[in-house]
Image (cartoon, rainbow, N blue to C red):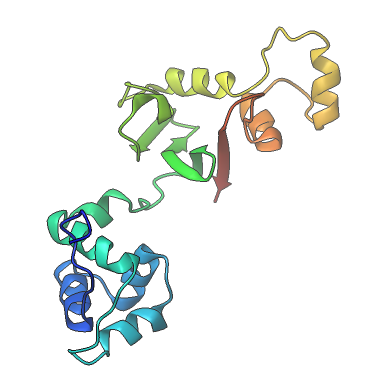
Length: 183
């Protein structure tokens, strides 16, 4: 044993069985595993006596114990025309779908630690909370020489969403940022 209760290898049949138990196609499983569909096809077509090693072995063990894990990482269908991804470096922490006209938001958190979530402990934020969040990712309205900074960004007036579109909501000495998608 190597210090963990994880087998040293797996087989193509086991990979296929786990994938099917999750209700995933080869393509979906490949996306989840961050590999190509031909890799999954190759694994699954291996002879029973062929030992497959590497990170897939550990991932399979986790998936056997936590079958709902892929669902926890799924990106939800877009509810509205505006979607914000609250990021920490390259990791999605929260997804915020926004209906600006009706002032409705839907929040999807992907992190357990509140400090990595867009709204911290608040899992049912109001539209006003959303507006405060946007402003928290911008320079303040009271900034000295605000008009010069807005002009530099090519923005005619102080609008947090426009500022975030230009700056990605990046702040000094902060690894959090916001990616915006519009339909």
